[in-house]
Image 1 (cartoon, rainbow, N blue to C red):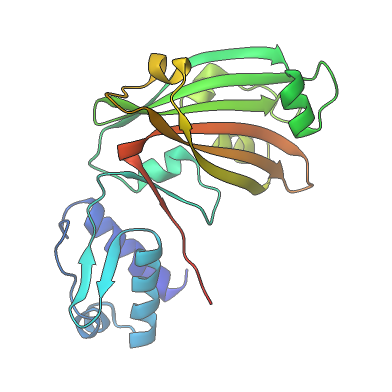
Image 2: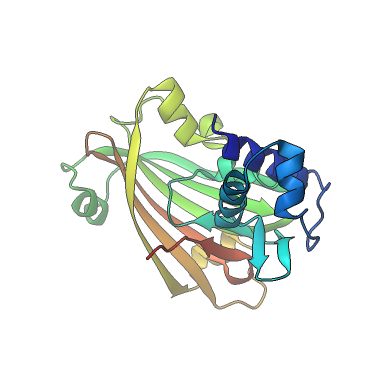
Length: 235
C-alpha cells in the first residue's frame, strides 16, 4: 500500500475513534512528516484524500480541521455501498431493515428503462436506513434475477454489492446517476420519519456490470436534513 494511503487510513481511524475530535485542528504538515517519517508531498496527498472523503477541511493559513459527520455522506464520484459508507462512521447508530422483498415480473416502465425482455424476473426490495433512531433514507432497489441469482432478504440486510462481488464473482463497473428534489409520496410517508418535510432528495442509479449489462435500478430517497453529497472537481 502506498505510504500516503497508510497515513490517510491511520488519520481516518483516529478521527473515527474520537482521538481527533470534530472541529479540532490536526497536527501541522511538519509534525505529521516527523510522526510518519514521510515527505511533505506524501503528507499532503494523505490530507487531500481525507478532504476528498469528507473527513477534514483545509483553511488557508490556519490549518486542517476535522469535520463534523452529522450527515450520511455519499460521494458522487464513485460506486459505494451503504455498508461501506457506514464503515467510515463509527460511533453513529446506523441500521438497515428490509421492509419489503419480493420477486416480480419487471413492470413495463422498468423493462423499457433497463432494456429487459417482457416477463423478466427482478427482485424488488425496499430497504430503510435508520440513522440515530430515525428512518431517514428509503432505498427502492430492482435487481435482475438472472444477473444476481440467489439474492435473499438476509443478504439484503447486509451488503448486496459484497454478495455480487465476493460470492458471485461479478465486477461492478459503472453507474449512471441523477439527483433531483421530488414531492414526498405516500410510500415515503409510510417508511420514513419525515416530520414536516414535503420534499425528499431522490438519487436514481442505473448500475452496470463490467461487460456492460445493467443489473440494477435504484431510487434512493433521502430526508432533506440528512442529505449530503460530495465530489471533487479538477480543472
